[in-house]
Amino acid sequence: MKASDVKKGNVVEHNNGVYQIRDIEKSSAQGRGGNVTYRFTLYSVPGANKMDLSLRADDELVEVDLLRRESSFSYMDGDAFVFMDDENYTPYTIDADVVGDMANYITEGLAGVFVQIIDDVAIGIQLPANVVLEVVDTPPELKGGSATKRSKPARLSTGIEVHVPEYIVNGEMITVSTVTGEFGGRA
Image (cartoon, rainbow, N blue to C red; front, side, top):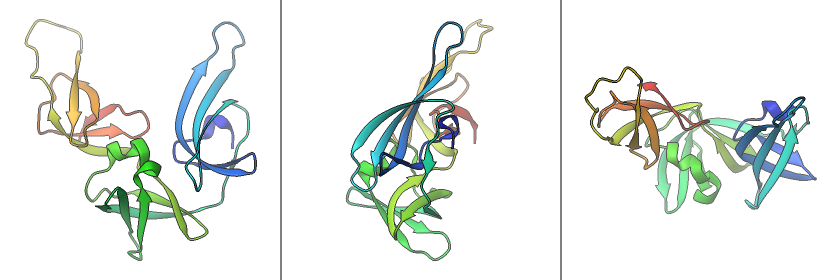
């Protein structure tokens, strides 16, 4: 697959190793004829050794053939996240260091998570594109004559902070993109 088609959570082969994509940074060169460059943060599977890789949009990466099982978050077991297979109720335990920043989007009972399995070992997860989180702390709407749409910071139930429109209040459920980390609307 082309570098421009790679998404967070994909598992790819590189230099005879298997890696999960954890972060993607896109940068466009300035000036004429500038190529788009993608910087990937990869973690080896297994082992979770970090590696950075820069590729142009048309460079190819080989996606690893792995099993993806639709699951739901069940509970924490120490520092590990336990997901339950939606079909056969197999529990999959994923260490917190493998989950990484994705923990900011995981709430009790979260469905639509794909657990990635290679050789019967759960090696990672892929979150749904959007999740619903509760706003727990955001300042009240500012009254005043402003024709522009303003945003304000809001802390969510998982501890992350996103910018929301002024009309959002504490206790509201909102949709957040797990890809960009941005507000997506009221839930």
